[in-house]
Length: 158
Image 1 (cartoon, rainbow, N blue to C red):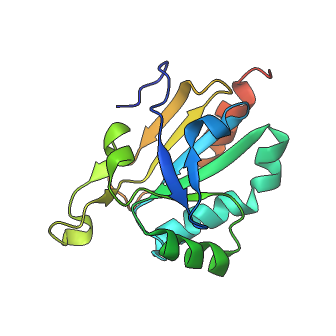
Image 2: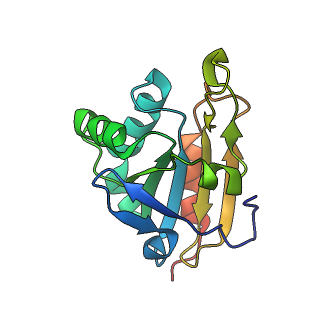
Image 3: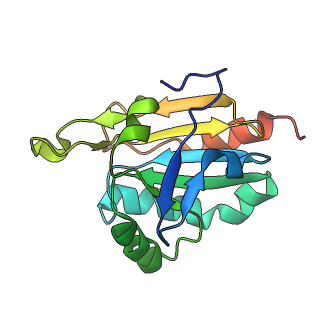
């Protein structure tokens, strides 16, 4: 499980262009890892579009965002194109990373066996250490966007 004060678990996942992406390539900047249950669902769309709309503010804080779901790279690509999302959306189709981070949600929407990512936010410092962790009580709850900005502002610049 990913815990505050610990190094974030490493991963290697495909992005929506079918390129393998590793956690290590995101180091050097503050990184928001946003786990989301499913592309094209209403709350996931609202959440990721909120991050999209605040991207310039996040970039000004030396922060970047990476979305992770269990959706296929193909679904993530269509989702990114439809919603003009320019940040990486990674596909954890084997559910390895959601388990490593402790955010596996079983039987989403009452569909037995449909195990997804719960909605969760991890903020990593430039070295990949977890400095903030929020896991929704249920995937229908959005994160506190102002709290995320406050945490980013509180981190020292490298």
